[in-house]
Length: 99
Length: 99
DNA sequence: AATAATGTTCGTAATTTTGCGAACATTAAA
DNA sequence: TTTAATGTTCGCAAAATTACGAACATTATT
Image 1: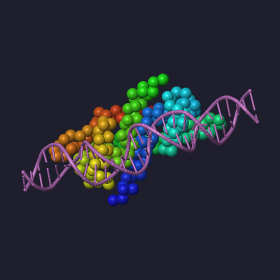
Image 2: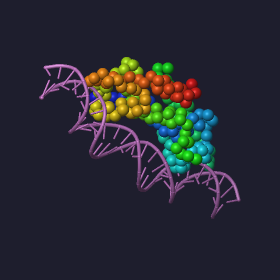
Image 3: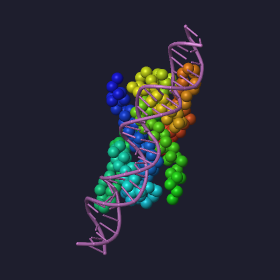
Image 4: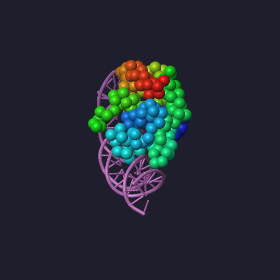
């Protein structure tokens, strides 16, 4: 049994999305962005009790998981939900719950 | 700003549930249990390409997060979904997606 | 009492995550 | 050309996660 492809793509994708959301800071960010549809890193930096480098890392993880995307509006960066993947995550989670 | 209670209980709870599901093995286990409503650790051990000690740890994490519960049927242990918390997770996730 | 069946816990190691400050890059403004 | 504003990346350290085999615990069976 090959350990590398034992799990389905869906299972791996679900785990990836869950992992991206497995931290209160990242849950907060996603909720914050959801409410405003978009936001700037500075908005978050003003609110969250973490350093800007740490915040940058959390944003990077959400980006790598495909849940958000950044658009450069120099000198700022505007972060928005990656709608396509957000809908995919929603679909996978619904499927998990058999909703 | 007190870093320890910056996040809401809901945000912390969401992160905790997400974290519990942030691994393909645990996604698999939850889906497997969901389909059968319950299962024995041995059933999973026969299927999953991991050692029984590793499996035991994953089950422990799901238990600690409150997503499953074990009932002793010596010499086996019967694992089932923790329905109450599973519904709570479902509610929180729905809320996150504004479904 | 000895053996088998089923899982958990312990000890260990490798890897990943989390977090920070300092340094850096980029562009706008003075 | 400085200086300010906005973020990212680097280097480091502490903590958590992942994984395994060996040892252990519990109960059923011989």
